[in-house]
Length: 241
Image (cartoon, rainbow, N blue to C red; front, side):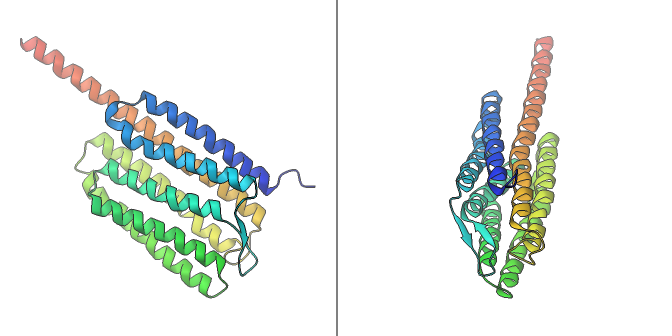
């Protein structure tokens, strides 16, 4: 009997997401009121993921595709909910308008839907759906690097820097998922289900928990600088008096 199984990876994913949720919930209490509402978005991301991984660890929601690959419905539900939440948060940080944020969220959701149904059906339809999902994701990336960053440049330097850090971090990690899709049972079948589960679980935890921790650190820096600037202004006003 193998020492490490798919259940092991899913259990570790559950623990990682749950711990991340607790850390971000604590971080929420340390933030200024100005940044708290949006930060709930990131707590929801890891919370949803913890539930999804818990279900997968219990072997709930596993289905077999037309090509014999194993897909996990909780994973795709997780991604369908959490990846749009990430792009919504990026839009908030950048100060993008509602239409742009809504478009990004819809395109990101479409990416997941096409990837799921592409994983279910047989070739060559699976690759056609994968291509459609890739186009949707390309639309998200294009908006993040054009329209959204244009809005972000109108914000203060620290907020712009945080947006760029979070955007680059999550886009680079998300670019790995299509590669896994192609190499796994949903695509060419080079990677087995166990290896795919290990890699996806690791990247998921890093992407979701890491995104939240980077955001928390950046928001703390912004709050510190704002408070410092307020103190300087107050000191200058008192001196003038």
